[in-house]
Length: 335
Image (cartoon, rainbow, N blue to C red):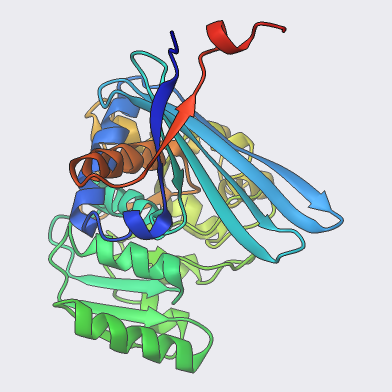
């Protein structure tokens, strides 16, 4: 008798409209709560290739209360000069596969949700002004999630190309309630902002940390290599520094690693992991004057949490194609 486990293959277009930004935020917040209470997660492993140039990257997590575990793997660059995201989701009770997903369409939403959870956990409750540096798909995902956790009345957007920032501002102004406007410099964006989001591919700091207002919160999500940083040592040293995973401060949290190397901070500068703040295990902001920084390099916590939410909705909507996976007890016969 066959004991093959049936799982779903879910295409990117099937997943695209299954959930709103607020749904992603709720799922990802719950994922980080579990991490704060001890759920296992590992930082990314990234294998570089020189010929052709590219990176093959993966990370994994187990969320026991959600009942799911999974890994997110992608190849970026290489000969096609593109990226492809493959997400495998398992039942954390039985260990059986639940789904194989094309993770492309969900990527900005789950990453944006992680940023929003960081804002919700660390920004002042009365924050009303938001600045976004960057105008690509990740900036779009960050912004759409951020407005779910605070009542912003003004949003400023800066990216180096005038046409890009203006078209982004026009699009978001139509979509969101707050006034969204393009500004001419990163300094103009940062000065006076209650919350600053960096969502760029920059390898050097995109603003001067001296310009941050007392009480500001920063979410930096475009830095995930030892020699890459979006924020400078001044920003890191001024802030209560909260990474998605503490282990990243030794592997790929470039802003922290370079601030440490320069002597601006010491190794004990990590205030807490985001999950610890979400779970109430560690305090977040302790005064209205605190500067806070969420370093969001990307983990499987938000990925598995969002994927399981989408998987349940796909099942409810009878989406996906059935795949069969053989258990090792049946397949590893050696015959």
